[in-house]
Amino acid sequence: MASNGSTAGVPWHRQADQHPFLKDAVAAWLNAATPGWRTDTGRGKDRMAGHFVHPRNPVGRYQRADGEDHVEIRSAGEWFDTEGAEPAIIRDAFVLLWKALRHHWPDAVIMGSRSQTGRDLWTRTIPTKGQYADGYPVLSEELRGLFHATAGQGRTELITPPRVPEQLPGLAEYDRTFAYAKHTWKSGVGMPRRVTAATFASWSQKEQSKALFGCGHWHVRVTVPDTWNHVGTLPAPAPGDRAWHYPATPGTTFTTWAGGPEIHTALSNPRGPWKIEILDGILFDDGKPLDDWSKKLKEAWASLTAQADLNGDPAQRTAAHLASRAVRAILLYGIGAFAQRPRTVTGTTPRTHERRNHRLRQRHHHLATPHRLHPRSQRPPRMGRPHLVLRPRRPALPATPRRRHLRRGPPRPARHRRRLPHRRRLPHPAPELALPRAARRLPPQRPPHRPRPRTHHRRRTPRPARPRPHSPPPTPHQPGGLMPPRARRRTPKPQLNEAARLADQLQAHGYTKRDIARIINRDPSLVSQFYTKHKGAAFVRALTHVLAAV
Image (cartoon, rainbow, N blue to C red; front, side, top):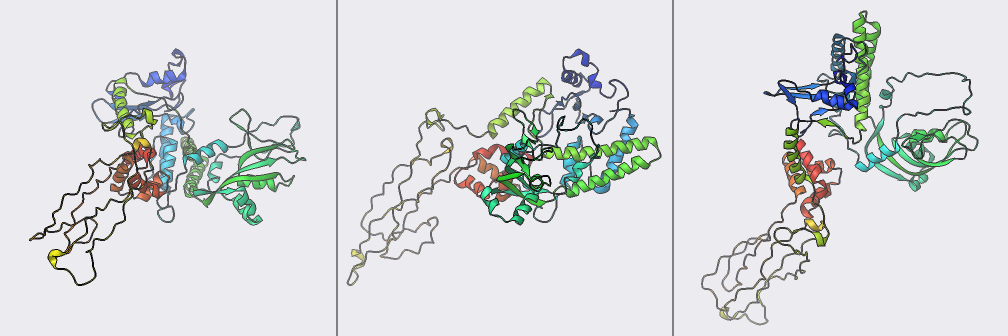
């Protein structure tokens, strides 16, 4: 929407003076009755989407009351500054943006937001051949939390007298409008490896310099030189605040996390080398996963900027300038989406849909939530058996082959031959179950085995031998030989747990165990233990979401 009045471009602020907060005014405007339309509560897995309530850039989602048409209302201010621009110029800006993107991506689509468009364009640059043809591995939650907590944004520092003179010797200004595009030419890929202090100290000077110039994150102990009289070089967490400061007082010692180039700059500073001790580090393989994506966006931005400078039509110059700002927003917010943290989103939806979808969510949550473990005294009964105790099976007796009783001397007549009593072969012991107590299952209990009484006379017609599982086919019974063994009952196959059943469904869709392990960021052997050791209760919810997405 364009802004040609006080609230013409932002109609959700028209009644802002009637509400205590701006978000309340936006919610009231979004939830106003609209004849023939109702709130779109989402489709597929995105249930209860509703309106997105934001004080500046809300999103209204509507659906026809008697049809399947869906409409999403957004503000053009998400993409660029619309101050003083007419709706026709804004429309031309989006047309120019679409044409510039289609020049590099023939199937490019402008999606609802800048971050969605940026991520969609990046997925089209993932290589189809080579090591990462199936996609780049995702960092674990622990590493993502570490980077979020120990890596900040650009440096912002206010320096006041007496650290600086009252009269500045000069002023330098850098145009960093599109600086993020330059910083994407190299980044870490693959699974990182840890570098301890002892390992780093054992390397040569050349290997240490190569590691510092690589893609890594280092935990260091830093001491400012005693003769230092300049601004700080390395960041440190500000005490009592979620911010960063740059210590510059001579003799100050602090512990922080920093990148390799920053550490190398401090070590080789011409004003005086800093004292730095490597405590720990994380080192990635060098790669360029964002290089192709950022190059294409830079070319689109350069072409639109040239049109804004050279076009003779003032309206087209304005439209090209707005389109170039939209390309910049795609790159900035696309990168920001990669490092996005969990956040709270406020939305609205009709109460009737809320109740219905709340029941669906409760049902889905009940099926996807892992079992909660209880102490033994508070464990709920299962299957009508309130007391189940897991005892190890008895060790199996050594299996001896059935053979005839041999004696020295000539063989006896057939009617006087004896045979050894039948020995029952016990089943093999089951492996130990490495499961929570609440998830263990016992095989059904069977009465103790009692062999049937046998007579000592021989049969005239031998009984045909029944095939035994996992044994070679029996030979025909010979007169005077032993009686064929009886077939034993088969131990019932253990039931699969929820994780194994979900893994089977994913394999039915074409995924392998290695693919499933890569999705949950674990070793493939753990997926095999879903079946053998009944593990995987902690991954049921994640596998459920993956199966829903598939």
